[in-house]
Length: 139
Image (cartoon, rainbow, N blue to C red; front, side, top):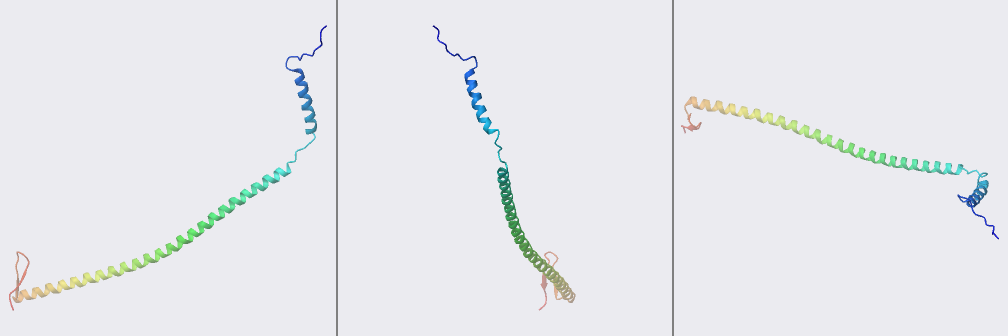
């Protein structure tokens, strides 16, 4: 007598049937359920708004730092301009003083030259041509 046994066909017919049963059972419950997206959308919106707020805070902080640096730069620039104006005034005064000194030296040289010429004409001094020295003959 032969025993009756069930032999699976090629490709695993029993496995296929069991798999199809499980899939159809689980998908029958899942097909009726709608996944709510509103909470996910609200969460993403909230996260995006927080990221934007953080970026604005960083931007505002950077702008505040920039304003502070600009105010410091402006203050130092005003101070440097004051120093520059004082330096210009001092240089102009020195230039005028040097012009006055040069004028007075020229006048002194002119008077000395006239005095020496007068003494030479009177014969009281004579100038040696070789080394430009003045010799006093007189008293």
